[in-house]
Image 1 (tube, helix red, strand yellow):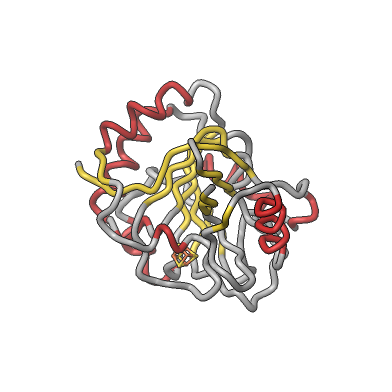
Image 2 (image 1 turned 90 degrees about the vertical axis):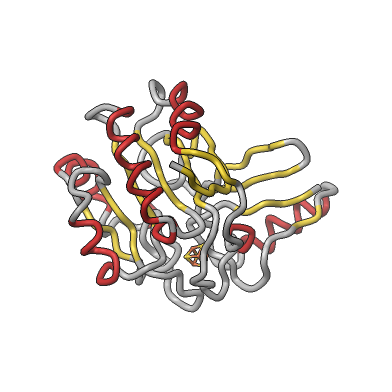
Length: 223
Ligand code: SF4
């Protein structure tokens, strides 16, 4: 099955519990104001296959606590997302969870999710709202809802539903890929400006968007 991805990475420690394999879909037409992942908006870039994704992340899984699927907008590649979830469930075993992010509302995607019973353990729905408050863990704005979809999801995420960001250390995952610096996680409002300034001082030019960029996505900073 063909799909379009932005990137894969391990470990991701800021988008769900524990050390996780991260899968970022490519393509998003929602265009939330303030999104810092505008590089993932373009569709039909980064073509790969579900089999190749599984092959790439497979060596990571014995160390991983779970898998996080973000974007971009995963639900804009419905058939590929379903195929990936099926393949992941077969690959990761019963003790690792799958968390999916979507910018769509729960009301829009829940019918589809009901046909995927058992494939995703937790889902964070709803678009990022730049002017919204930002107090809950793993969410860019407080309108975003955490849904527990399986027994494993309830077991692993129940305490996180209303958990506050302040209960976790302030952290972003930062990793280097050639001359590109990537960050994953959810920066606090306004902090990206400081981060990109520090990187600029170190000789990197930022390609991140402006505004108060808060998003559960990675963003590229190009040297
Ligand atoms: S925050 Fe997520 S859903 Fe919103 S525009 Fe950015 S990638 Fe798309």
